[in-house]
Length: 112
Length: 112
Image 1 (cartoon, helix red, strand yellow):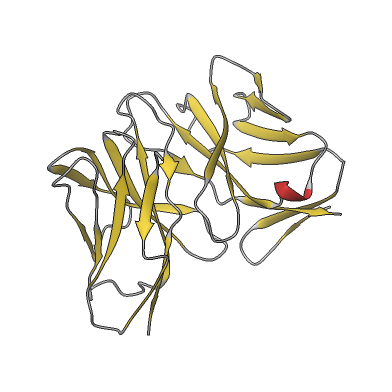
Image 2 (cartoon, helix red, strand yellow; image 1 turned 90 degrees about the vertical axis):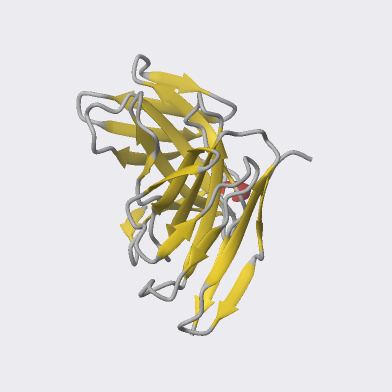
C-alpha cells in the first residue's frame, strides 16, 4: 500500500528529554512537512523539506530539529528547548509540482 | 446553527440537510485553495481544490465556491451524513510559494 506513516501514534516523555518522531512515505514525493496542531487550533508549520539534504524553517521552528537524509524519511526531533511540546504532530508529503499535501495519521506527544 | 466553540467555530446540521462551511482567507494574492477534512485523532484528508480562475468546482456531494472580491471560500456538502462529522479546514497558497497556509477550521456535527 502506498502512503505516509507516522510512528508511534502516542508518545509520552518526561520534561527535559529529547524525542524523535518518525515520518516515512513511499509515495515518491519530493516535499515533506511537519505541522503542529493544538486542541481546537489549525495547523502550524514547523519545518519543511523540498529535496533530500535540504530543509527550511516554518513558522514555529524553535525547539525543533529535522533531517532529510533519504527521500522517504523526514524525522522530527522535539528538543528540551521546546517550551510547550505537548501537541498533536502531523507529517505530510507532496509532489514537487503540487500543493496537494497527503497527511499521515499523526503522533500525539505528551510531555509531563 | 453556528456558534463559536473554545477556539473552533462549530456547525450542527440534521442528517440529510445540506451543509455550508465558510472560510475567509487572508492573502489576496492566493490563487489556489484546498479543503481538507479531519476526523478525530486522524490526519487531514483532501476533499476538493479550486484555482482562482474558477468560481465554482463540484465533486461528489461537495461543491466549493470562491469569491475573490471578498476573499471568501465556502464548502457545500449535499445530503450531509453522519460520516461527514469532522473538522474542515481551508488552505490557501499562491503559485511559487513553498507551502499551504491553513485556517483555524470549522467543526461540523451531523445530528442523526
